Every structure is written in C-alpha cells, then in structure tokens.
Amino acid sequence: MEKSVRSSSLLTVIAVVFLFLTNHSAALKLAAFLPFVLIPVHAFEVLKYDAMSGWNKYELVLPISRKRVVGSKYLTFLLLVIFSFLLVFSISFVVHTLMFPTIYSVFLNYSLRGMGLIICIAAIIYPFTYKLGTDKSDSIMMGSVGFSLGMFFAIAFIIDLIGVEGFDEKFSTFFFMLSIIFLTISYIISVNIYINKEY
Image (tube, rainbow, N blue to C red; front, side, top):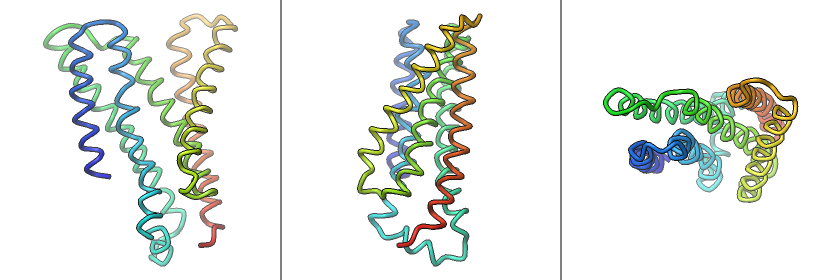
C-alpha cells in the first residue's frame, strides 16, 4: 500500500499544481476534490491484501483485541484523508501566497464535499466487506459509490428545496458532518461484525 500511496500522492501533486495554474474556477473545484479520490482509496485495499496474504487470520491470534484491529483500519483511512487535505491545502497555500488567490470559500466547500464523499464510501465499504468478504469487494465498492452519490444529491436537493441562505457553505458543512456520523456508526457496526465473525 505504501508504494501505491506514494504514486498517488505524486500524481495528485502534479495534477493539482496543473489545475491551479490554469486559474479557472472549474479547475480549482476539481483540484480541491481530486486528492480525496486518488489517495484515501488505498486504505480499502488493506482488507483485500490481508485476506489474500492470510494476515486476517493470523492477526486473530495476536495479543490485541478485535476492536483494535478494526480501529487500525479506520485510523489508516482517516490518516490518508487528513494527509490528502494537508497536501492540497499546502499546494493551494503556496500558489495563493506566490501567485494568485486560491484559498476562498469555493476551495474549502469542495474540499469538504470531497472528504464527505470518500468518508461516506468508507462508511459503507468497511462493514459490508467484513460481513460479505473481500470476494465481493468490487460490488461493495460500486454500491458504496452509488449510495454516497445518492446521499450527496439528495441532501443538496433537500437543502435547496428548503431555500437555506448560503447554500454552498451550509450544504458542504452539513454533508461533511453527516459523513462523520455515518463513519462512526459504520465503525461500531464493523466492530460488532468482526467480533462475532468466525474464520
């Protein structure tokens, strides 16, 4: 996974710098969103690698609780999300300081939306993978993406229908906070599944 994260990080830096240098509003939105699509997804591969190598069975005999095993997977994911944000923010800050403004509400809104989407995806992937196994990982991934996009557009539609003032900021913040709640519930469910699972 380490090699994949490095490659994705390098690709992200190149892509984000290029998008920023275009100084176009659509490119700025994509630059804020892109890192969360390219980097944190590698955390999901850990479950697959563990199953392929047999590590998921070996870790059961280690002197650590199953709760901590599950927690380590979620922590890895969260660290990659934080790293993605720090990476794109650092690039944005340099461009903002040396060239032209990049850090404003649109950039922050799309960063929150990117984080919210990938967190929603993770909230579905982990419990379903623990329950159904890594053999179903592709189907689980497609289902989680569909669910997350559905939530994204449904919340946007409801907030727009209500007619809340400052739509972009309110929607981005609410969606991000809701994704955190989903991930917390997902962690509790995953722990319960893993504790009761027999290999």
